[in-house]
Image 1: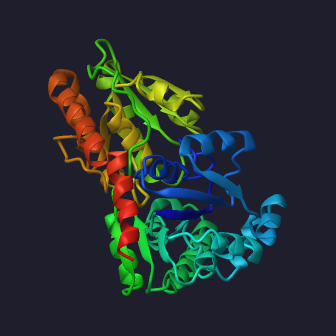
Image 2: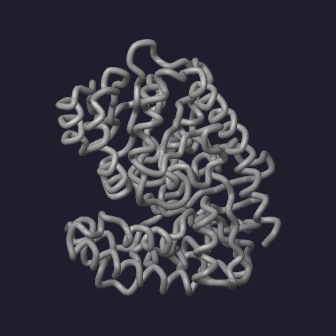
Image 3: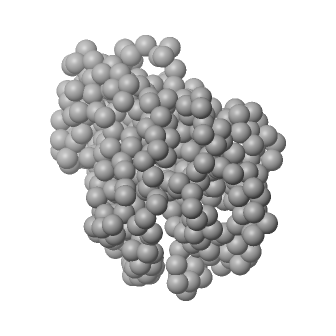
Length: 397
């Protein structure tokens, strides 16, 4: 089967300036009978020399196509805030030139796969084909959760800007075509929310594939201080949930001797300082060249996510690589793990502290949970398995 992928971001092994790893792993581990050719708007600005390497990895040609020149102007002039005055989200305004559409038609593909929310103009340029749109999250659900979170209550401007975007996104999701197209999402709640917005859609939830992993890591907690990793930036996704646990961590100085805490990401200086003042060994690493090599140095990943949709790639990374993952319900949603069997889900800061107090005295119990977590993810989020499910959708259109 010959499939043309049209994507807003160029696929990369790890997320590069955008959520670009999902499409990479779906492409790389596709069934042998799938012939693939890629047209990318390169919204994540992947350098040409890297693209050439990715073409070899994916065994697929990648053609870079121009994005909307007016949207480009907003980015170049740092006036992207003007998007609030556009009728729809800016992804909507990207489309292919008539010449490129003709080229694709002349290749006589069996199906068109579009990767990126709101690329309706692109979808409408190809009539008469089997079509699948990988969203991969429901943006309306994202804004619904965000507007209820403390992040938006920091200022009326944040609240207003996000409310404007929420209305635009809902208007557009209501316009999604309901015939001859399948919608692919990596979140069950995302799928249900999308169907509430637009009941006629043929929407499917497929688990998110895990990314790169090593099976060399021996799951055995450090003998001195147990090493905790918090991965990701201090931004809207962790803002509220982290702010809830930080005071509790600082107040319970009795566990400071049992743990070291490392933040892998930016904007954590304030947290490092407060934890150090409370007696913890804490530090921040802003960037690493090889993410996998870094995360396998730790025993536990703590993931206090308060806003988000779909599946959290960094949680999958940690589970697949043998870390015990402790997190909020949003951190674990859509992942094939179960509380206290293959991960630990906490409901509030008090419960988290109780777990952290218990772990040093019950290491074997929690190491076994980490072992089961890795097993579940490597089985249920297996890249070949998930890719086969995705490409199986084309036979249903």
